[in-house]
Image (tube, rainbow, N blue to C red):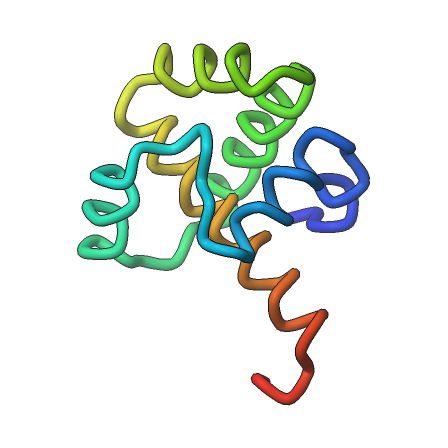
Length: 101
């Protein structure tokens, strides 16, 4: 997944920053909990789909519009988004605190 592209998007960047502090304004906590229970690695095809979904969400600046995009997704798309997003958040946390590696 092209983490660099997503991290350069101002709207995605601020979402990632908030998430590193435990605040997920556009994701329901129940989705994250369900996702954690499934916890599997993405295939290459899933990564490509997730990249497109991240781009679709990041094209919107307001949280309300981003939330609308996510709520309109089917479960598969939403799970791909959550996986990719949490990977970006994890990457940011590790970048900011290399001692966690």
